[in-house]
Each structure stands twice: as C-alpha cells, then as structure tokens.
Length: 189
Image (cartoon, rainbow, N blue to C red; front, side, top):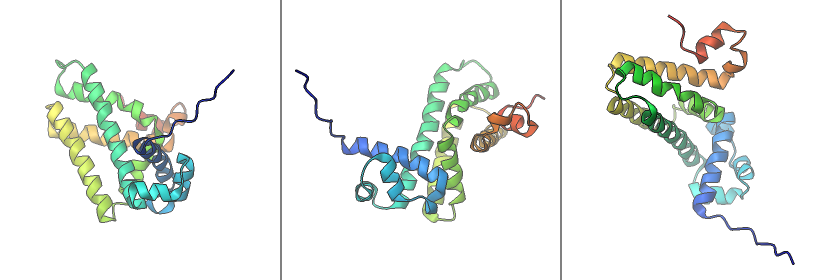
C-alpha cells in the first residue's frame, strides 16, 4: 500500500524567503510603484494579505528585497576573496574579486532591482537604504583590499557598467556590438 505524506507546512521564515524572491522579480520588472503585492503573492504562492502581514507595506517589502540583493553581492565577494591570492597587488586583487561579479550579473532581476532602487531614490527611505548599502559595500572593499581610492572608484564604476550591461542583455549582442563588448568586458588597453 502506498501512503501519501501530507505536504509539509512552510515556516514563516521560508515563506518570507519565497516572498522576497518573488518581490525581486516583480520590483525589478515594474519598480516600487508599478509592482503589485497581489502579483508578488501569486508568484510566491501565498495570499496577498499574508504578504502584508509578513512585511507591513509594499515599500517595506521593496526595501527587504533591495537589502537581500545587496547582501547576495557581498556574500559573493566574500566567497571570491577566499579564492583570490592574497599576495596579489591590491589592484589585481580587486580585479580578481570583480571577475566573480559575472556570476551575480547572470541574475538579471537582482541587477534590475538595484537599478530600480536607484531610480526610486527620491523616496527618503529608499535613498537612506541605497546609501547604507553602498556604504557597507564600500566599507567591505576598503577593509578587505587595501587599494587606492582611485582604484576602488574605478572598480565600483566598472561594476555599475556591468550592472547596466546585465540589465540590457549586453552579453547577447557582445559578439556583434562594440558597445556591448565594452559593457561586459574590461577594454583592452
């Protein structure tokens, strides 16, 4: 006789994770004001009132999604740092850590959510979080790689270029379009 196990109930933390994953996609696509908590709930497989019970407001959910993407990026850098030769000069260490960012840019929704958050920075809460995320990212880099401020600035600038390139699908046309090659690869100089 075959017995069917009842579906395991998901914890509030597991549902919260599901909602944030769904929110990253919806907010990346439609922005803070265009995304709906109904669509996020449907994507996460739960009710819209439960989404609001978990997060309170749509903006709080947006902020949680942006925080999640920022934390994912820093976690990627942490993993990369463990694989990079600590004896490399600082500029080369930065480049080596940055080369792992390609892995993050494959998650186009995360990249687009960052762009959406910067576009929504007129809102003081969004701007405050954007400042906090950038402050933490900058602090991580300067704490872990003793590079010059110019090298750090260039590293972040190229990261921004990669973020835009990922959002635009530059890798899809890099074989035929020079602009796309520049957006997804360091130019040969």
